[in-house]
Length: 291
Length: 291
Image (cartoon, rainbow over all chains, first blue to last red; front, side, top):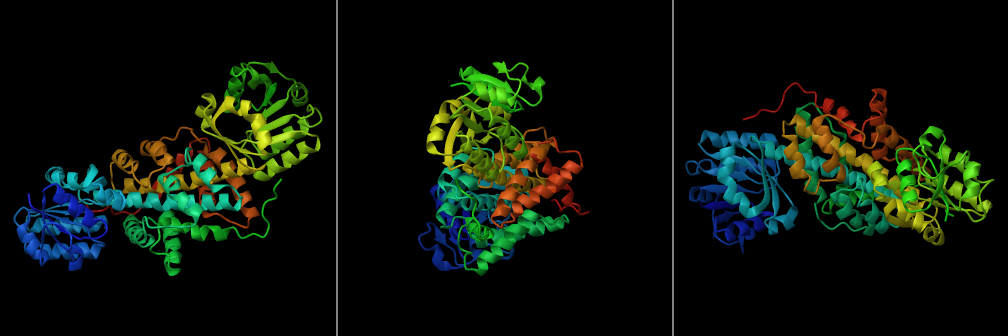
């Protein structure tokens, strides 16, 4: 099995290294060729050159348009029966469109968005949410096992992206709750470290509370999960919900906050930076009386 | 140390039993005397009778007015230097008012709202968030250790209630996020058990996602944390936030949903019943295309 990798971003470069370590990587292509430096394997001169040399192509790019552009460039050059695995986070409809185009030339497709961040990409411990036919999922196992740890087939094409979108909605709602609650605690004059310690063990807790409330308490928001990236993902979620006629308050609240954060130059901070917008809500002159 | 217990509700009856098992309980009083049946120790005929016989009085009642009413009834009869421990969930201001009234007659006060539910009350594994002077907190240790496991002094009087309010805001925001995200997943036709399994391990996870999304997937919402009770707690949070000039979106969204649930007769269900309101958002005629 010869695997080509496209998209050497913050996640992709680690995934390519792990495919190399598993003895699967034939080579890579990246829009910005400089990114390919230091990546083991061949450095292809074009998407078509990579397609012609590989049985399996893995993508990890940044947006729906980029996925469809790469698919378009792959199609004329793909080997018969090639498999394309898309690890980008895009709309379920984009996955379905990519799968349909590839099917026309006899190629297979699996949508495989990941979660676990740069750390998970580095340690090959990503969670991979897959959408596609069971036989295609089976065929992709050696590749997915080289980059991730929890690998689940969620349903037909698009189901991987729909699962990732569900996760992004959860993150949006939870970070808003954590930021508001912690801003309240701060306004009440509570010692935030002790609040995080005791409430982190209870029913109000969440991954974001345990791992990101400390950022809020310190007032520093190193990325993390960047506001600009979650903003992009939530726009995908918004469009997917709109296809069902739904407007989701959780998505809309977070997008409104992210617009304000980006306008203020905080788009590259972790999403826990929404705390910046919550503390000013507590603007009353009179603090609570203390004994 | 002779401890009297007031308020034998779902939580209080277990707490009284645990105080008895620790050899601390002198007796109990309850507004509805029938509730005292089966509780070990004396069954006092009035709050004043209990006050006259005990060094420490523990309250666990349902609302701010009830706390102040009991404090009013205790005051004329309390022993010199008595300690009143209030485990009810009420406003921080109510705690400060109770402490001030008791101080006038030389009695001490500790606000000690708990979390951990009926299960935690039964197993003496409650988290107890305390507000008061360090010396009073120390004095209360034998009593608190008999009913809880994680016992933390959060600050001066009212700080326990402020911490509990922070927790209730977290719960409100998280349950909304979980309900919306799961309604989205359902509309996308995803297998909810697998969604809960994979996303429950990731950064979007929370106690409520892991423990209550399965209720949503089954469409059954056994209490749990009752809507009517969280509604009461969130009204306290709303008033506390208003004292700082703040209106918190998380509180307002949940209260609007709880009003709808109560009007529809679901006030005694677990708060995960907000899922009932989220699925109808997905009303479009056209489901996503499937391959």
